Amino acid sequence: MANDRLDFITLQKEYIDSGIIDANEISSYSGKSVILTFSLNEYNTLRSRYEGKNVYPRPGRNDITEGTWICTLESDRDCYVAIPVCKIGPSFFMELKRSQKDEIITALWENHKDELIPNFNEVYAQEIESQIIAAVAEKTAELREEISILREDKAELQKLLIENGALLKIYEGVNAQNTEKKTEVLEVEEKDSFDVLRTGPDEITSDLFTESKYFVHINDSMTSLIIRPHDSGRAICFGNKIILTGLHAVIPFTEEYVMDSSYDPDTGDIRIKLK
Image (cartoon, rainbow, N blue to C red):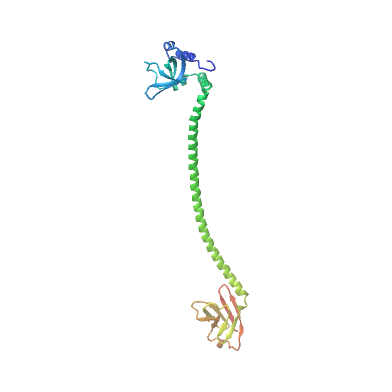
């Protein structure tokens, strides 16, 4: 085989030796041996192109069908007529030797590179574009799934934040109340108003007396009093003063004085020594 063209004579000889084609068919051919692809035109006629001219099967020959053929060309005015040698299909290439396939590929590339490259670009560009579109679609689906999961996680986090925020407010409220109570206790403990004054025969006064009703208990020996805030208490308080009817009978009153007393901030009890 020459460097710039396929040696179809050698190829034909090998096909004759292998029985693929008949020697009588080859011997009657003259002209160029070429590879052409035939297809039906708008007039339902088989046609191919070679060197800018149309190529038709020789009149009366019905053995050429659509597809790619090795054929011999004869010039006929402004066109060519083709005499088939062998149709090229999958079986054709399967029966070729590796060296023959390489020679065909090399010859096609060296002699028709300018025609092949645009076709390769078009075919493989479409294939690559399809692969890219498929890859983008797959990645997009993955990202949408990840976004959906992240949105669910975000919703859960927001729900937890709301719940924790509500718990935090409750905790802060309770803590503030506890702090306020402790502050009140400290303020009461630091004040001089811790004192209980006897201001009349049956009257005692103190800044500790802030409720409207108190329970009052005197021990059997009548030596001490316990005063405790209570809604059902009988001792009425107004203006920080409590009236203890009969107190003057236990301890006579001569003048105002500070009574010996103590305050329990945990229970709110006020203990007063009478004697």
